[in-house]
Length: 496
Image (cartoon, rainbow, N blue to C red; front, side):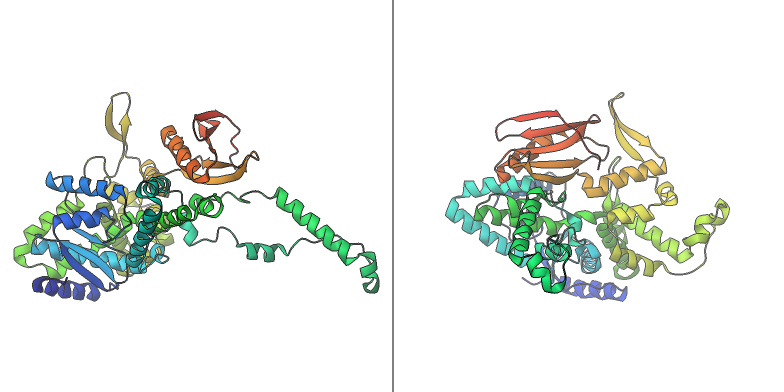
């Protein structure tokens, strides 16, 4: 269904302004939805079709109640696809629709050019529809409850992937391994060429080679190196039925599709907010619309005590970068300057800000974005602080305003989305066919209830007991689920 005429005119206007500012995006198809339709699509993660599962209904109920009670309202959604699909809420004011369209064009420019989206499926609308068809076929053959139960299990461990594996070669293929190793070399007695076949009979050499290869297989680790993509290890090695493997592959594929959105939430929303602000205030607003726009924009960028608003942090950091590169506040001379008065008035009038933010938009994710550009000056100007629960007073309080601690806490929260690093350590633990995982301890202990639940789900997929090696209170612990009961015991925890 096409847009009403007046919205189509607005789209053409906003698209023209976006291109004039240098944004480059996939074609964008806007659709207008009422609030019920918007909640339905939001429950599906922005897609019109997903595989059938009860969690989407639960998400819909939560969104619907939030809207009815006035607790939340979805203004826009946009899908990383080519062409991109975006949704407008029926009944929004003209100013809201303009703002949403400008915001969407910022998002789609980011989807198209940011490196961390470069490996995603640009036809994922078709991919999701294909997944839905496959799951429905499995349900017809094996029953709804059986399939839904296994989907529950897979979704419970969908975060056990390796998002960076799309960009880094973690392991060689079996063919590459053979080529790199050059096969097994059998030691031979030295002999002249014409005597070699007598001194080193070919049949004997071949027999020795086979024996060495078999011995090598026996001593080979499984897997040879710790593997972070737990789902891939399960797909390749767990004793799954064909339909189980297919469903696990679907869950893993969708997890990788959504991973870049989690990796770039602050940047993506900040970039979109930057451009909707620029387009609206410089080009698209009529004088009569300024108050309505200011009110709506204030709501988008507002922050509650103790909460992080990705829109606010992202847009302010992009503006900070643009200002620094316009004024030349970077490089060796700037870093070595200790005169605070000189730094405060520093302006080399380089005008490189716009070029720099487009470069940042292309190459960074949230962790590298914050690590490089969240400076002492920015932290103090924006009044950032670390917030935590004080057990003595029983209140949530400001812990510190010290720059390093604030930045470290923010980076820790963003690294791996604040989730623990889990690796497959051994697929034949203690020669019993059990699964052994290892938690890379980063100074924070695992939540025991979460760890135990994870072992339950993994043992269902592995169909054998599952173990995880971790540290609790500074001591090595091995947690185990044998299919019925949980147990734990002390264990050596190698730090490497």
